[in-house]
Image 1 (cartoon, one colour):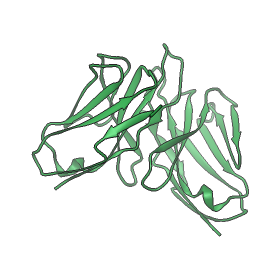
Image 2 (cartoon, rainbow over the protein chains, first blue to last red):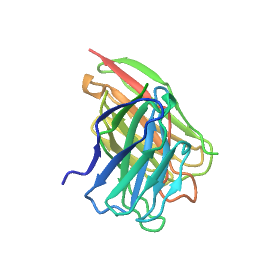
Image 3 (spheres, rainbow over the protein chains, first blue to last red):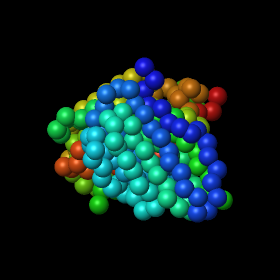
Image 4 (spheres, chains in turn blue, green):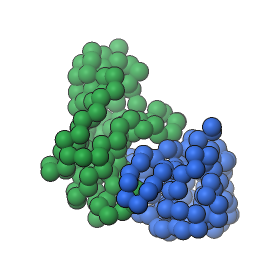
Length: 115
Length: 112
């Protein structure tokens, strides 16, 4: 049971390049999330997905897109990377059932630098 | 808009001492989570608090929730160096499906 995995662990991009961050979970969780973590700002939600095929914007969605084609995978895309997107990106997943609450499990993170 | 504030932002304490980290939030919510993050690592769930008056304890850490005051506390008893980490509280806005808003974190450094 690997939990939540993310690839790659590290990435350096040049301004204007595109890339996709990958997240997978093997816990059969309905909900998945993408966060970014910047110094002094805690974690901020970029996008989340309550179930396969559905996605919703979080606090800071601009410049990103997401895809949840399979229950176990949640992809985060950067169409045209900017230095302001330099950050550590965390994926998380959780069980959910209506409004019943379960804790979120986090992946190891991806350190992205945009030059 | 839900805001979550933690204080202090940085806490340096000696081993064996007690201290409390505070988490205030601005709108109604009955779900609060505490996480721990070691440097360069991911977040680890510590406590899930789901109702007013909830209290949970694990080792030297105890968390409580007062939904009327919109306040949660994380109390550290007889701190040890291994507790050095950043601690985050996270709150779910009312009506949202498990979407969390995180505080900025409290960096705890326990000195021998």
